[in-house]
Image (cartoon, rainbow, N blue to C red; front, side, top):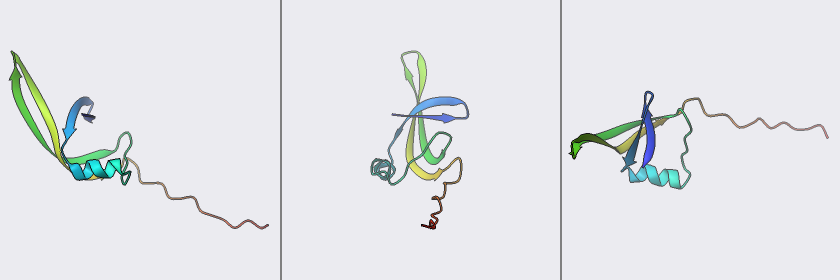
Length: 81
């Protein structure tokens, strides 16, 4: 389960997008606080006893939107010695 937010409301989701999970595990992509994921989601509501519950699943991650532009590598300068 992953913890995400929509606005200020945190909730747990499962991510079914195996390609996205693989890229994260192989460290091909990374993300940080306040980055956004554009996703195709599936929500299911059901009763558990007398309580209405909701399950949210990320079926596909369409895009990773960084909260700030990626930093550029530091410039390298020749030293005069």
